[in-house]
Image (cartoon, rainbow, N blue to C red; front, side, top):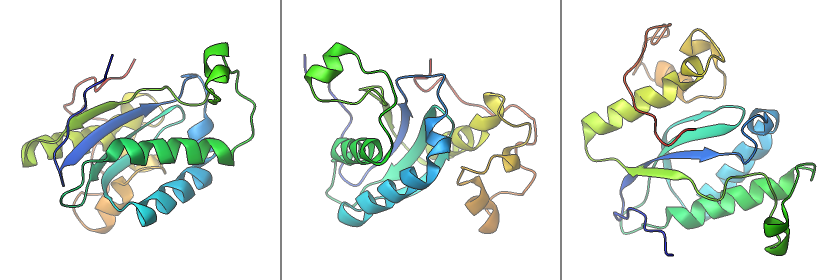
Length: 176
């Protein structure tokens, strides 16, 4: 079966990418490695990060691809494999993954949504920034360190007390 993904050259996309072990804290424990790999991939295959949050076991991001480019799957593949190579092998690996020479860090698939318009973009940016509160990691958005929220505050796009415990609209976005 071929999995079909949305493709709009130069489009913006919302992503949810999960670890295979949803009880792990690998992403925040290895945030330096994750940032380094993302920067490396951005240099060789440019894209813009419009918003992002990294939680212990999953991340959300909104990317804008260059005009004429639709290949976000290749970028995610490079990020996931590059990150996996940078951290010690300590996760359980099922036989099906061993046979394909895969690590057991990431879920194979991820959720993507093509951003339709400015209102859709705004809803997804809010969802990303509020996600640490939604999952109970913090009570205030500003208290989560691994988020573009802080850049939005620096650029005066959001006030420092935004999302200070009030529910923000947003759907499930492929989370389990």
